[in-house]
Image (cartoon, rainbow, N blue to C red; front, top):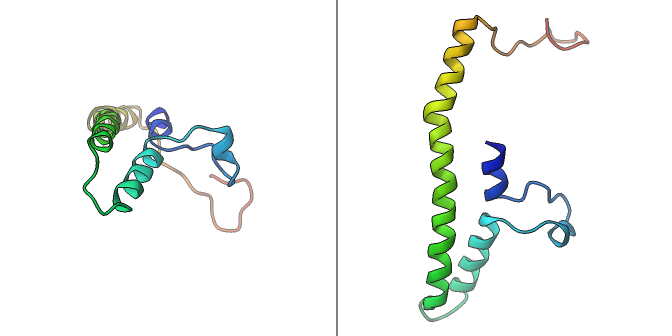
Amino acid sequence: MKVIEEEIIQVKAKSSQDPLNFPIKLNNKIAVLADVASSMDAPPTDASMTVLNQLSAKLDAQLAKLKEIREKDVPAFNQLVREQAVPAIMVGKKGMSGGTR
């Protein structure tokens, strides 16, 4: 899922200078395109629509991968956890150091 997230958003950007060091991702590209289109008094240009279609196709591909993970991998993982009788997330008692018990 991390690979999908990193295609959609720039996870490394933490400061205002980071866009200089790390490339923008799909969400930023689509947001900029929307800003450009909404700033004009005319309909979006053919070039804008072409770029939107390209970016939408890339986003759809990532969302399809995410859907597959949610529908296949997550249930398979949950089944494996049940079969192995692995406990779910365990939280230690409040105020105890060391975390889990």
